[in-house]
Amino acid sequence: MEIVVNTRLLLPNKLEGIGWFTFETLKRITNNHPDDHFIFLFDRDFDEDFLFADNITPVILSPQARHPFLFYWWFEFSVANFLNKFKPDLFISPDGYMSLKANCKQLAVIHDLSFEHYPKDVSYIVRKYYKHFFPKFARKAARIATVSEFSKNDIIKQYGISASTIDVVYNGCNELYQPIDEEQKSATKELFSNGADYFLFVGALHPRKNISRLFQAFDKFKSINSNNVKLVIVGEKYYWTHDIKMTYINMKHKDDVIFTGRLSPEDLKNVIASALAMTYVPYFEGFGIPILEAFNCDVPVITSNITSMPEVANDAALLVNPFSVDSIANAMNYLYKDEDMRNSLIAKGRKRKLDFSWDKTADALWQSILKTVKGN
Image 1 (tube, helix red, strand yellow):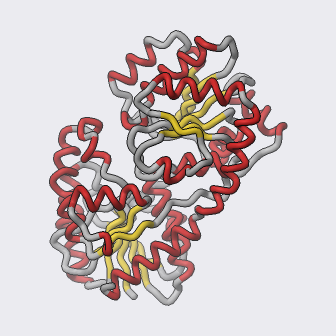
Image 2 (cartoon, rainbow, N blue to C red; image 1 turned 90 degrees about the vertical axis):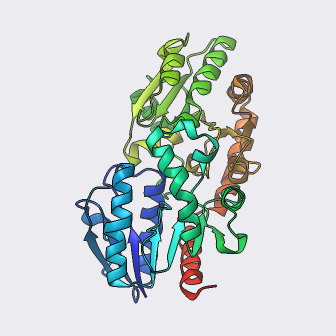
């Protein structure tokens, strides 16, 4: 087969959720299927590390697609012209963007529809683009893959897509994430939290990640307990909104909040594995990879009781109402004081993590690819 893939989010040292999905699945699929030919479409100079196998041909198409107007130009002119000329068996888009003017079969990976539920969490121009084009993308796609049953049902409800054309392809977790010994934990704490225990958040500081309420909950937790516990925030301040900023400024215990920015995978693995607990409480999520990363590192998890997170966590996490500061704070207090509960969640996490892997993700996506090409 001749398969063309949108790989514009394969950016060196800048991989986010969808970028990691693209990286981990394509690395396996291209190596597992050497008789098939893959063309990777980049919108800028690419890193050779992303050419995972000899059956990959990289192509750079201009312009760099990092703005809605350039999204439109790249997909509807550059990509469409390439696809209509090359006539591949399939075009795969791991970020869900389709080329409406292209005539070949297309497979969209739509991770979530958060903008449909919380449109004000994205800028006006991006919101207008998403609201206008994603229903068209969903209907243009010959088939859709998504990362949870929650997202599948949301796509069906929002866009009226048939359930028979949507495949659930769960995310996995990098094998780098695993438990570390007490000596490594102590060294990590000295480096990142002045030797103190800490709750941890990992992710971009986007409004839907619920950072403001996490700040408030941590403040309340600190007010309940006299302790030296910190809150470590790992991620870029891409969306440091006025609300997040003011909540942080007004914190009584803001000196106990530590911002690390983006970390290398090796440092991130150690920071996760050394945490008292992962506190990951978005109010909307298509999957929630940090939950799996914590499971793999033998770290207990506090996460939200809505959208996809109960589906991913199952019974292996302490579920909270993300809209309730008290609910989050009480869970933090509970885990801080109850070592037996922490150990119970760690044991359940060890079992739950076995249900997810990037090998399983790649295999499931490949089955979706075959269904799309064969018209099943």
